[in-house]
Each structure stands twice: as C-alpha cells, then as structure tokens.
Image (cartoon, rainbow, N blue to C red; front, side, top):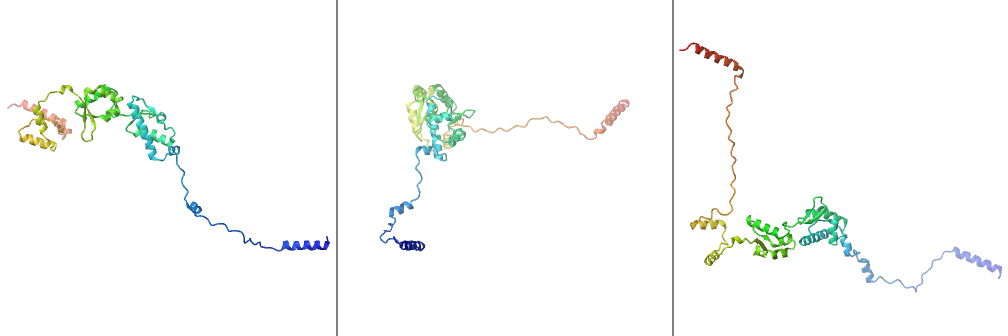
Length: 292
C-alpha cells in the first residue's frame, strides 16, 4: 500500500478523535409504558403490621387483658383442685406447670407472684410468701365440720348458708350433702332462686292444728313493717311482743368514783406553830391555878 495514503489515513483518524460528537437516539426505539393502576395502588398502600400468632401473643407482657386471663385461669384451677381434696400449697412454677402456662413472660410471672396472687381474696399465701393455696369461704373439710357450722349459725341466729359457698369450700360436696340430707334443710330464695342450707333441728318439730295453719296463712303482713305491727297489736290489747326482737343497747353512764373529802388544814401562820402551842399550855395552866 502507498505510504502516502497510510499517512493521510492516520491523520484523518486523529482529527476524528479530536472532534466531539453527539449521538442521536434511534427514533424507532419505544418509550417505556406508563405505570399501571395496580402498581400505583401498591405504592400507596401503607405497610401492614405482622400477624400475631398464639406464641407471640403469649409473650406480650404489656396486655392487661392477657394478664388477668392468666390470673383467672390460675384461680379456677386452684378452686377445682381444692374441691377435689388437694389443699397443699404450690409454688408459682408448679402452678404454671399445672395450668400449662410456662411460656408466659418474666414480667407477668413477677406480677403474679408479687402482686396479683397476694392481693387476690380467693388465694391464701404461706407465711414465707413462696407458695399459694385456695382460700375458701368456710373452712370445712367433711360432713362433721359442715354440720358444726350449720348448728352454730342456727344457735346464733345467723340464718342459713348459700349452697354455692358450701360447694366452693367443701371437698366432694355432692357426696357429703347426699349422706347428710336428713340433717339439712334446703330452701330456695325467691329473689334470685339460690339454694340456702339450714340446720334441721328435729327437737323443734311439732304438729300444728290445721285451723291455726289456715288462720296463719290468711294473715298478710308483707306490706307492714315492725312499727305498724306493734301499733296494731297495741290497739288489740296485745302486749306480749314487747319483750321480743332485737333490743337496742343502752349506753351506760360512768359513775364518778366516791372519794372521801379530805379537809386541808390551813397553811397560814405555819411559822408560828410553836408559839401557839406555848400560848395554849400557859392558858390551861393559869386556868387550873385560879379556879372560880
């Protein structure tokens, strides 16, 4: 090849490299498609919170509803356990193990052991504060203790005992009530339809004449209070009810102690006591020497 042509070719390349150029886009290229409606809705959606499963919910220590749910389950378990005859105290770890609640948070466990169980009226705490047991309404363990309690209520005029309180306090309650059915009276309270237990005192049983029963049932005193009944009895000349019923205690007055009055000797002229005694002696001597 001619060396002159090669030199011109090299010079042309240098000039081409030194001259700046702007590239033009091809008109045949397609523009990007506009964003669809679905994409814009996805971008505008706020971020959603993660779903909570059962294990995550149990570890939440700040929920008061969850805390009291754990406490209610423990109290129910302790009541059922007492009704079955198990009354020995348990620690907080043993209670959580029996109720399948070992996965609760440490803050909830501290709240149960330090505050909730100690202040619950249905839970009794040992003196060292480490173990817990159920606290029934009445301390009765068998049929004998139940009958002793009913007799005390009957003698002191305290009335009956709610069946639900006995069921809560007495282990194996249904069996005991069945064996003692002849010694207990069951009365249904008309206000709330609750059953009340009374002691069946057989010594107070006596037959009442049918005519007297009719007269008793015909006398209605539902709308009358004690004051109106007393007024009616006084008008009829009946005063036998005055000594019955509750008596109002009369406050006793304190009597002043009878102290003997002590007359105090006059303190005037105490410094002349010796002079007075000498004067009295001289006077008596003169009287004795000059009798009249």
